Amino acid sequence: MSDSPDSLESRTGLTAAQRRRRARVAVHTSWANTADRSARTAPARQAFRTRFERQVDPDGTLPAEERTERVNHAIKAYMLQLAERSSRSRRAK
Image (cartoon, rainbow, N blue to C red; front, side, top):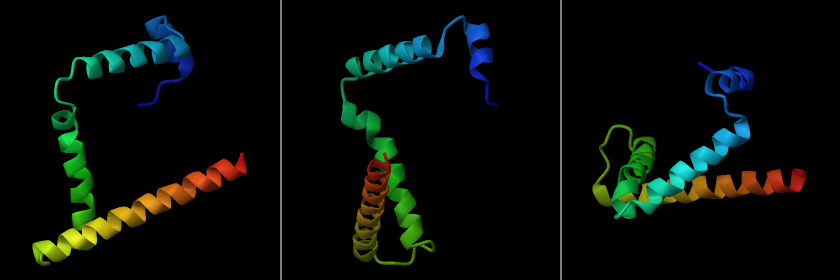
């Protein structure tokens, strides 16, 4: 369900800029109160790796060492693709 900006403003009484500022305050407060940042982000890092594990070994039949090597290469390829897209975007501006 996508709310239009006018709909959100009428419901919350806040402009888009005010909502963004409140969200930024909330996220910085949350991180300021996080004792173990690594533990907090661990599930996301694991999910990221799992995505590539499924990509390179969908049946789960590769030996662990081979799967790890392939996952590392798949991640590097993905990051290089992101860098290329970013570069193209900057050139277009």
